[in-house]
Length: 89
Image: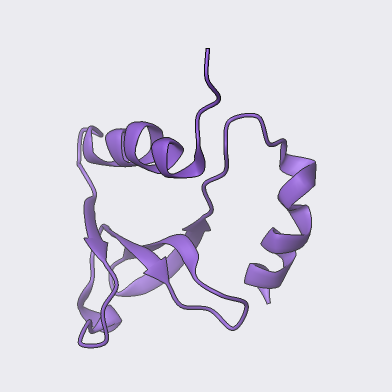
């Protein structure tokens, strides 16, 4: 069995879960013309941060509520703790 890659985790796990919720999330690609202050229940892919792009930024009622960073299934949370700390800042 081959190892699931990060892009597969995004497409097959995260996108599927976000779009299949009882109140589904809209998933959109980031672009320069996007006005974040208008977003509600939107996951913005490749959201820019001072430490590089985050895989998803979650917006609810015009506010950034969280970041989702996809990793290969075999990568444990301790291996990405420093990256999460950078996004927190």
